[in-house]
Amino acid sequence: MATQAGSEEVIMETEAKPEEAEQRGEEAGKGDTETPSHTDAVDATTQDSSISNGDDGDDEQEKVDLKIIWNKNKYDLKIPVDNTGAQLKERIHSLTGLPPAMQKVMYKGLLPEDKTLREIKITNGAKIMVVGSTINDVLAVNTPKEVVQQEVKAEENKKEPLCRQKQHRKVLDKGKPDDIMASVKGTKERLPTVPLSGMFNKSGGKVRLTFKLEQDQLWIGTKERTEKVPMGSIKNVVTEPIEGHEDYYMMAFQLGPTEASQYWVYWVPTQFVDAIKDTVLGKWQYF
Image (cartoon, rainbow, N blue to C red):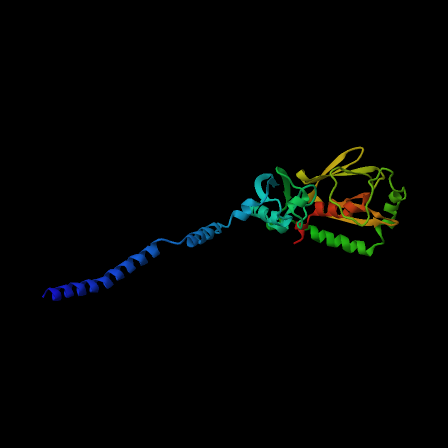
């Protein structure tokens, strides 16, 4: 009997061992789930550190603070220095509501759209002058500038070269002024920071041109007086190279609807001709 009882105890103990082993296996499995490996922790940290909120790139760009002046209103604008003139126009549009195509943006002359603010050397605190009218303002003008320009161009095509006409020959025959600014043929430059001087007007007197961009005015100065002409009132700019001196131009500012209102200036250096026309007329006007 004793032997039989002992055998039963051995059998019961043997049957209990698989259950204990299974329980220990489950506890080991739980331990593996709850305790991540060192490698998994490193991977998670790396993944978290690579997540960006999307603003890092813009925050890291170098920016400049600008003062935008339009229609007697002033706006503060912070913009990346590597933005182009075209991008600046878009920002001005968001501030003023003035479409980029209607803007004439000035900073030491007409602002080029294809260059960055860094290339133009715009610095902190710079004042950016904006001239332009809304589409409604342009449509309300009784005599659109583009119509006047087309009529003037048609009349010019019917005539002989301006420099051969008697009214101009009497001035041109005096020869090139001794103190005229030197010309640079084959190049285009922005407006100089000093007045253009040493030129002749129609009466043969000395004349100088000063571009007051902050006031949107052209100052035409002679020995007797200085006329302050709003650029918006100038209907057209007529130019023609001087025959035999193609590095200089004769130029007329049309102050009214007819040729009688043209103010002529002779011996304008060729490198400034396009800058003068763009500044006075502005690309925004062509609609």
